Image 1 (cartoon, rainbow, N blue to C red):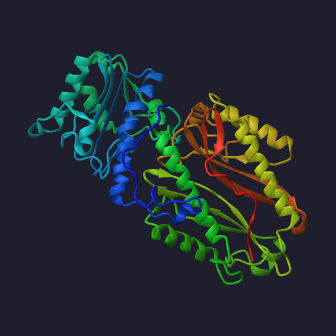
Image 2: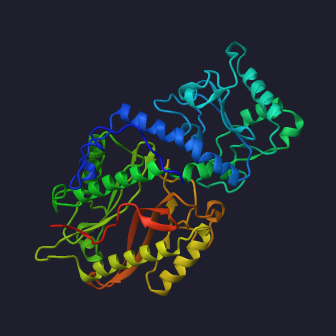
Length: 447
C-alpha cells in the first residue's frame, strides 16, 4: 500500500506532542482540522483503496442509492466533512472503466459536499428523482458493465456487514429504469462494502494508535483512587465519570460505558446481589469505546480493589489474568492472512482448551463502526461455526477488537468459578497481528 502524505499538520496534536505526553492529554483536533484531515484521507482512500477492492471482487460498477434521513451506512463514509448526509435522492457510482477509475454523482444537489471528488452526471434538478434514475440508466447503457453491485445482503440476516442500505423502493426504481439485460447483471456488493469498511489507510493506522492510546489512558485514570473510593463510589458513579471525561475531551462514545463488579460469593452474601458500591476485595471490569475522526475503539480491562492489609491481588486472580494474556498470544499467533474467522476460531479454541484456559471467543472488526464489517471470530452463543462474516478471510490493514473471556476456579474465593472478560484493539499489518497500542500487562490496583 502506498504511503499517504498529508500537506497539513494538525496544530495542537502533531506539533506539540512529546514522548512524555499522554495521548489523552493531547488537545483534541478542532472541527476544521478534523474535516481537513478526514477529507484528505477520504480522497486518498477512494483513489488507492477502493479500486483494488473492486478488482479483487471482480465488480466493475458499484451503485449506492439513498434518500435524506434514511442514509445507507456506507454512503456516510463516502462523503466529505462537514457533510449533510444525503440531500433528497442521492446516488453515487463507482466505475472501474478501461479509461480509468471513475467516481460519479447523480444526486439532486449536484455532487454535494464531496463535489470536488465526484464527477456529476445529473444536472436537471427541475425534472426530479425520475430524471436522476434516467441519468443513471443512460450511463449504465453507455458503460455496458458486466457486473453491477448494489447494497443488499442475500446471506445471513444478522451479519455486521452494513451492506443492506438499499431500500426496496429504490431497488425497484433502479430495476425499472435500466435495460433488461442490465437487470440480470445486478448483484450484491456485500464484499466490496466489507472491504471498504475494514481496510485502513496508512494515516488511519497511525491515528488509530493515538485513539487506542486515549482509551488506555482513560481506563488508567478511572481504575484508580483518583476516581474510586472503596466503600463509597458506585459502579454507576464511574460510568458517568467516564462519559463526562469523554465529553470533556470533545469526543464521543458509541455505546454507554459499562463498569461491572465481580465479587466473591461470600462478599455477595454480605452486601446483597443488587449492591453496586465498589467494595474492597472486588474485581472490576470495564467496557469502553470512543469515536473520533470517523473511527471507533473498543476495549475491556480489569482491576482489583485491595482489602485492608493486602498489597496485591490474590494469587488466583493474578493467575487468571495471566491465562487471559496467554489466550491473547495464542489468538495473535493464529491470525494468518487468508484464514477465515471460523478457521481461526477453531484453532484458538482447540489450543486454549488444551491449555485449560476455558476460553469463549467473540472477536469482531472495529473500524467505522464499533461492531464493524469484516472477519468475525465467533460469538458468545456460536463457538463452533459462524455463518456469513465468520467465513470472511483475514486481509491486510484491518483492525479488530480481540474480545473473549477465560475462566478459572479461584482458591481465595472458595474455588468459585470466575470469568474474566478481555478486549484489546489489534491490527493485522505486514502479515502479522499486533496490538495497536500494547495491552494491559497486569491488573490495575485500587487501594
